[in-house]
Length: 412
Image (cartoon, rainbow, N blue to C red; front, side, top):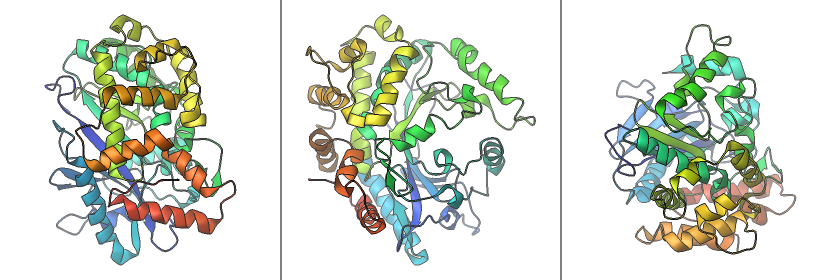
């Protein structure tokens, strides 16, 4: 995303899906069977018009992304769903298909196979340092939202707004209630693993919520330089660069003038993902415009104030109680009662109407969230306290069949 784009002029969206075998949902490390160039050899990217297919760290994950930064998100729920359908058609002869949601419900870490082709030196370096067979590396499918900024002033405004929204994203997008066949009691297990992924080198992730820095120079001083110093003893050949090793919940890319939000779990279908993206964009626009909260108040919020809210939402999802006044103001909450995170999101959605002009599928997706909560909550309700392997497989096969049809999952 180029720095020639100003705030909200363009959007980049990335969706990650897992490849599984159709009969029993076992992990299938076969992305290199569909990411194939004209010469029949595996490639990292295949451009297909508006959407591009790409490889990821592990061979059982494939990414669908906007080929270029786009001026409008209109039509992309349908475009992504069409690509899910096409990949399913290509995987069908192998007995495989794509599986939505942010974590495979029964996968074990030893099933992971790393991508063995382009950029493998980077993946191998991460694996050597962190052992990427863990769930936090090999079993986490996310949605990334990329937003542009044109200069330091725009970066400062966008980064301040994003920092306020990040802690509550699990309450909007949690879809990973299960690990290795068991409901853990956490709403967002993907982010529970993510926050501890790089504990061996804590400078990479920090406290997930980025530090309150509002210029390129300060970002380099506070984030990139400590990452570089911490990596050096583990990476003597300099394969891993600080810019690409930064693992906070939102990362700045000054080389292309954008901030990438990384705390969104993949949903059951692209319409749900796009409805969530539109909701975030609408709230960020309002914050950048200082409608609810002046910039100086936004920039003054510390990591100490925001990190506990993030952890509460990871653990409790949309049921987390939010007692932080600055977030009440950011979301437009005016009641004297302490709201749940779901109530904050419903308040913002009612005021902003982020999908009013979107597709019917996106509108339906948002209505399901408003009335039933996160996908994690709906899956937990549907599975019951002690789901059998057969029940888990049946439910997730149902989710897989609906991904290409933009079909929402309802627990009612």
